[in-house]
Image (cartoon, rainbow, N blue to C red; front, top):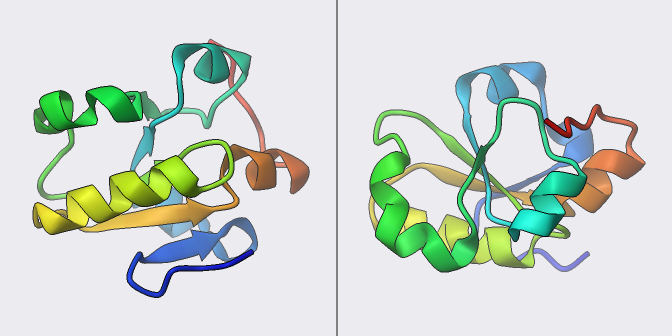
Length: 107
C-alpha cells in the first residue's frame, strides 16, 4: 500500500504491544463500522466530529489513529500532528488488523 512519508504510520505487523498499551487508540470510522468491530479499548470519534471533539484526545499521550483501511485515519493523524499531538496512522486500518488475526471487540 502507498504510504505518505509526511504522515507517520505503522503497519499491523510492526505494531508492538508497548505502543498499543501506551497509545490512545482513536477510531475515526462511522458508527455502523465501529459497531461491526473495533480495537478493544479504542475511543470512537468519527472523522467528521474530530475537529469539534479534539479536546477529548489527550495532549500527553501518543495517538494511534484507525479507520477501515487507513485513508481517514491518515487525515486524522495529519490533523492531530498539526495541532502538536503525537499521532500515528495504522496503515491498512481495521482491514489489516482483522486480516492479521488481531482481536476485535463489538461492545
